[in-house]
Amino acid sequence: MQHNVLILDFGSQYTQLIARRVRELNIFCEIFPYNHFPSDLSSYKAVILGGSPFSVRGEDAPHPDLSQIRGKLPMLAVCYGAQYLSHFSGGEVAASNTREYGRANLSYIKENEIFFEGVSENSQVWMSHSDSIKALPTNGVKLASTHDVEFAAYKIEGETTYAIQYHPEVFHSTDGSKMLENFLVKIAEVPQNFTPKAFVSEMVAELKEKLQDDKVVLGLSGGVDSTVAAVLLHQAIGKNLYCIFVNNGLLRKNEFQNVLDQYKGMGLNVKGVDSGDRFLSELAGVSDPETKRKIIGRVFIEVFDDESHLIEDVKWLAQGTIYPDVIESVSVKGPSATIKSHHNVGGLPDYMKLKIVEPLRMLFKDEVRRVGASLGIDPELLGRHPFPGPGLSIRILGDITPEKVRILQEVDFVFIEGLKSWGLYDKVWQAGAILLPVNSVGVMGDERTYEKVIALRAVESTDGMTADWVHLPYDFLMKISNDIINKVKGVNRVVYDISSKPPATIEWE
Image 1 (cartoon, rainbow, N blue to C red):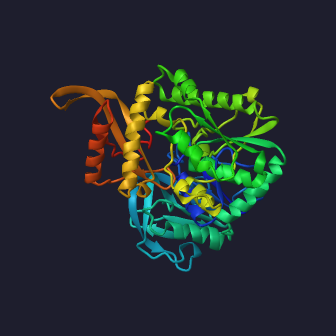
Image 2: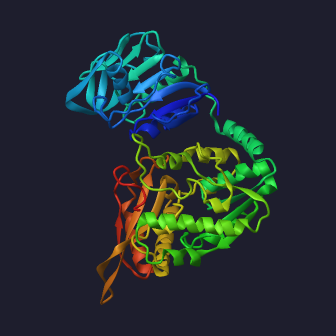
Image 3: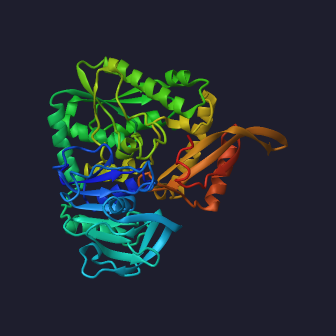
């Protein structure tokens, strides 16, 4: 994509949210670690320095090489970035008497500054730092203050460099998106041309050029990502795309056949492979979640290797990898730590000898849905909740057995169908049930029971980076709890997970 915005990651939890806000302006952007970004910056129109959990005064402070950026490209330094420019360019950064965290209001804004155009005094911003700028860098000019922070924003004369000590990307900065728009569109003059239609046009052309007449095999999951990837590839290479839908034995109830039926009429060449017994055999006795993921990833690749040998001259494996997968799977000193491995990110074993193509690698989940809509994909399919690649294996805490899979499939079916019948499904970003590794005492009829506990999980989110639990109606939860306990043999207690992300994750493993 042209007209990129480069975002340098210093490990802040908000870095990906900056990218989301930039994309909402129809501007394409990319995140790179501060110490490993492209040497060729000719296609970039602006750079944003993100925040960081580090202090610029610490020995382990991240030190970016800005020699090819500063003074050459418009630059916006956020929080740590603002302090970095000050501390190492003639200013002063010192520890605050109190940690400056949370809501604050602008008490002063310099007049006639494009960066604050349309932003009024008293506008709320979000602070998150324990250091504070005490003196501006050489040629620094104060642009804004809060009641507690004199240098909340500044610019450097002679450069198109702006710096702010707050986070414009978070929801609590009420005019944050406007400030980003002012910087990127009015100051840096970055074109707003990153639309679903433009993405489809450029990606189909890129795929045609890259793949030529090569054959591509793609693993379909029935989810949004792999489906949109398949339709994009189909537009580019048609009959040379071979889709394989693998049943790993950990899908939702009846999902294997339902998904195959769903793809009929879409013009895709799809083959269903039922390998459930193979996966469950490999997973027998395994409780560690990372080990589960690795086993599923390995067996998945082995199944693909078996199937790809049945297709002559296949050269590529297509994957539905999306941008959060890519970012979360990068771990270097400074940027965000890897929370968990993603089975669909990374290279293939040498023996498979297939190259990887990932058409959605640079898109967030909501962007994938918008691209899918522009491709004419069924809204019901695009509205499906995300489902983890390892399937129910990471919703069964502890070891996996066919009986546990049966119980969870039945519970999940009751829960999801209940959300649909109550008109709640489309109000939830992701929902599922978790089988806990504990038994609970209960009474059914005149008998004492000692059976499984189920946790229900429903969250609202935009792209899974952050998530809040959904306040489902009590009447609904009561009905679903009764239905699960009465209809699913082996369960006698249901609880509801009210944790947000962070600090929790959406999945339990």
